[in-house]
Image (cartoon, rainbow, N blue to C red; front, side, top):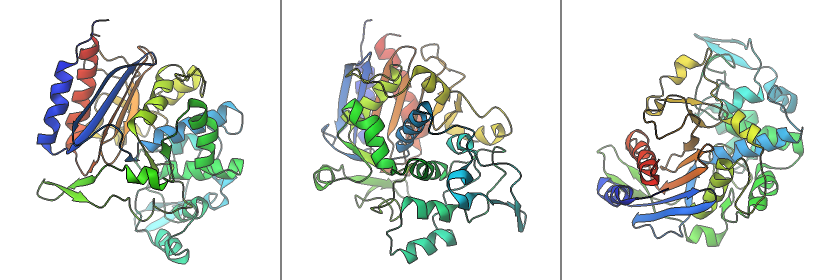
Length: 370
């Protein structure tokens, strides 16, 4: 395989002029690093708030527990979290009982009917009652109070579904998500710099964070997440992770290589990975999914995008991954055993999803000579 990443390097070097102060990209093939480049202010040892890139880890932990027989996709949320037994659905000006069950599969596939409204009265009540120190289970209970947007399984809506999954894992095992992640994924793979609860040394390496303001300008913001995901007893399965590029690459590499890490440790079977990346938006949820314009050509499986209609012959069907609110992005390709992870730290930058990520993906494959 003849590789030439000159175009990719030039593209990354141009991003600071496009409003990305610093970025870092790593590419591995068959457990071996083949490319690494930082641009702008990035030096390579930073940590980042990973936001929704957390979902890949949460799904990996969930799939591992299913392999162990602890959970099944058909399990209902109410079997583990009783507050989810009597869900309602908003129907005009009233709320009616839900007609379908909220299963683990529907939560993982974002077909649960929840939303991302942290201002909901139940959530605010729990935050006030706990003085901003709510647990994962307390927060999940609050999410159950608001009527759903549709009957479970009958639509797609990006939401707090994976935070509910994290609560189910805790209820099913008696262990919080961060402990399960350590036990089942992070420790086996030798990952030391991915965490739901960063230590002072990790916070000291936190990359400066920015956002895009109303005028389109990139401006600095404080290096913290919102008050919800910052809570010390809350493991946000959908967005609570912090970490560095080197550590996230170990996870991406394992999922791109049949569930086996660079150190030989297995965290998932290839069958579970294939199940994770199978498109679930083929029924009643498909019209909603097709409204997600920045994922053209992709379906959505169990917490990950999955390529179903490649625009280029270089990129295989089944390439999968996800991204985060500050621009982090992960690619995993089991067919070619390619993994890539890109980090930036700018929220509200829509160009990252519509433009930067697709361009980086295409240039990776061009650079690999595929």
